[in-house]
Image 1: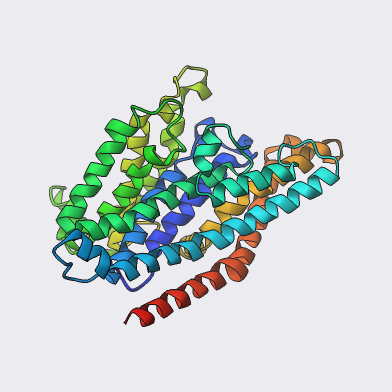
Image 2: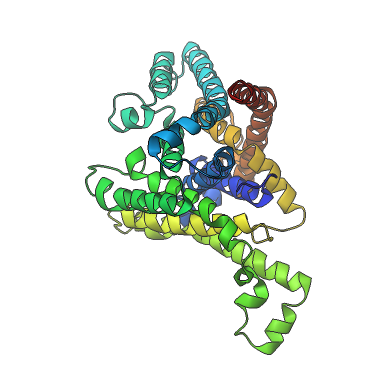
Length: 412
């Protein structure tokens, strides 16, 4: 069921998602149009990608012919389920806790230097780290039970909760048709039960955000059925177009340009959609519609369309010379980049305001100055992500692979 190689178009989407997230968080918004300020939909794209990728990695570990009863299916797949949990643990936890330690160290240094920043409270970082380790960080944060220095960890909590559920659901359902029905029911419960019954924001709670992860699972379950279809060929999509355009599409460069344009258009829609819906930034009153269930459905739809196109591996997502390998590199480091960029923002903000009077006006008051700061920020963020990827993320993933392989050998 899964592809044995890395899907490079998924890696490009990961890069786009993390860059969108950085864009909405960094303090360099003066460089961009106000409608780009709310491009938080990178997390929505991450959720759909996660559901898609983990499903493709888990299904090949299951028997092709599942037993007839639910109990028998659980028994026959118990090592696959345990292996899934172990892979996720070694994938997520080491880097997550490594950055929590970095936050704690930064908090100590900032406190000792006299900083008044919220992050300069080491005890708060410890509290948040404990909440994350307990698997309740997003709910504790939403309830105000812990500070929000690690607020971007809410998405990790949502994924953790989904990963506890997903393998059990896939195993118990047995057949693809039953799995699709279960996922559809899951989406329906989120949209028509969980969200309407939830008071306050639905953005950071697991039971109100599972729909996008379910969308990714659905794409993974269907990919082998729709991927070989000729409907995805540029010639088929333009069959009703004028003959001259159809003839043009017969040229490789024209097909590549058409596919890339479609991918770029969908990425642009996903980036702009929250800002377009957020009329507050233009002096109006949006009543927070851009954080409503209807808006999140729109974000999920566009994100799912992008993942569907990426799953085809036919050049729909950023198949652009020079840019494509750069995005693939950034995508492979996207997890470390996501975890670390907020720490760098907190440190930057503290240093910027404490030494504001000593900073040249060029950097404070001009767009080129802001652009140079942004470029330097991205370079430092990538360096930190590269170090984490090489010395924390990759080694622990290898350990996880070894542990899971040992588990399989013992079960054989």
